[in-house]
Image (cartoon, rainbow, N blue to C red; front, side, top):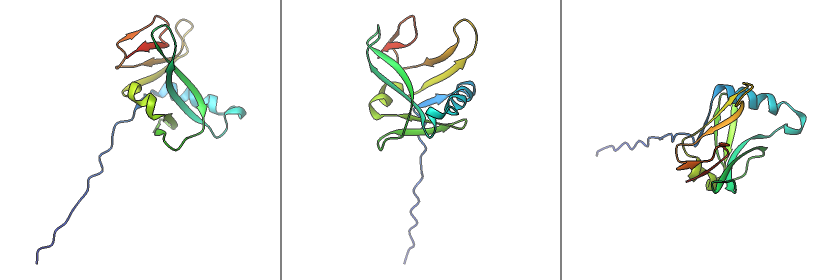
Length: 121
């Protein structure tokens, strides 16, 4: 009698969105505000902007179908619709006087507008 051992390997898929350490630190400081208590960072896309779609970020509660990942102590939420456009995206933050704020770098964007907040895929 032969003994068959079946092993299933769990393959970790890469996160939809990466958040840099500087972006995570800024998000954590914003989450300390009372109005954001218990919420998480949601990054999503919606119709609009000068290139057809635009990036948005908000503090929100997790929904059943959200894709989630934790980066540098920040839980990031992405809905399935947005995930198809955001896979591989990096969210960064700079506090410089010129060009400061959150910056989204999306490898899937075929075209981006000058403001960096809208794109076409």
